[in-house]
Length: 186
Image 1 (spheres, rainbow, N blue to C red):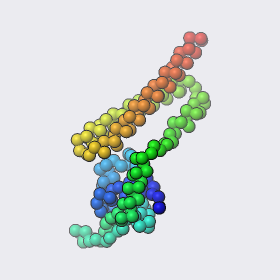
Image 2 (cartoon, rainbow, N blue to C red):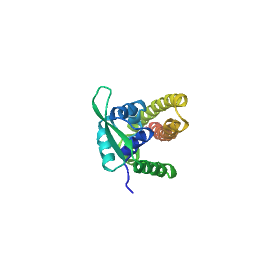
Image 3 (tube, rainbow, N blue to C red):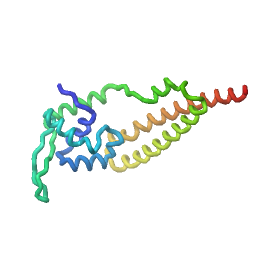
Image 4 (cartoon, rainbow, N blue to C red):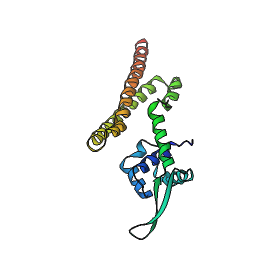
């Protein structure tokens, strides 16, 4: 069985709801803020649609628009639907490891002076707080306008951010304690 990329899955998911013209897909990507939680971008839509069509996961049909222009409308094939269902099952049945660039930074943290580490982690915590606010706002919107499963687009990142904040506070406290000890010895 063929595999699909995250970008392909994002488009298959949109097309699984109903057939769409590319401009409708782009509008939906914008409306759902999908650029914030997927790898899909406006510039990649046509390229990904071509790949999906090549793999026989979607088909396109040329239709005349109201303005009498020929436009392609894309529909998921039965094979595309089965593959998308398998992709969803694989992602929801087993935890997948994520790679975090912060881990590379942490493994090399000794390259920075303590004062800079403290300053960086204060800034890091501030940026986490800003993200928490954004996701709380998103959660409010999703709660009012979307189905339950869509809430996870905010609740999961919120839980991860809260854990990340706690971790960053512990790192900051450690380096502040070291700095305080060094200042006392001076």
